[in-house]
View 1 (cartoon, rainbow, N blue to C red):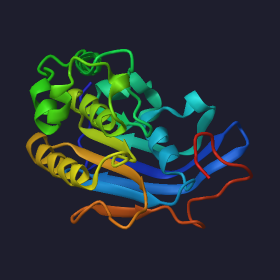
View 2: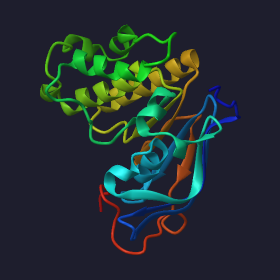
View 3: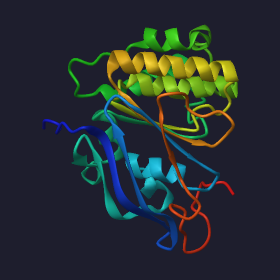
Length: 240
């Protein structure tokens, strides 16, 4: 099926997210990611940034969450009709907060595992050299177990796995977590360079700090009154 071409690679329209059929995590949230752009979603802990990204990638069900209303369109098509793995194969990658790597596999094996996302894409071939070019430290430790990497190195690996999938859109949840300021700068530079070359977009959710996502990035704020409406309690996985 040919994907519908639109001006936005991602459109989130007036969504409401509920956890455990009781806890309202998001209400009335809308955003768009134009093609060729970087969009940063900023807000305090617990504002719903991670929930927003999970809603887009179809992972809410894993935490007893559900999209109660609204719509999410990826390349003009509703994400509701696809399972998370199907979205990945269609070009949507999600780097979750917390450095989700296979600790008992080597760095190289983690990257190889990500190639499943290329299934069914005849022209796509994994580019391991590109990942090692961006993150030379991963090349040095490619034969070592991922569980023995530092926090920053595991974050590099998580981002590297997303790049292996050659996505059209990358969702990055707290992408700078565990990285040194210099490495954050380098990572942003690599993302911009790769974006220009591969024409992919990404949306990043991050806790607001002194430094923003850089010039040229659109910033969307989760406001205390606008987007953080809950019946009671806190959504699973959200920090106080």
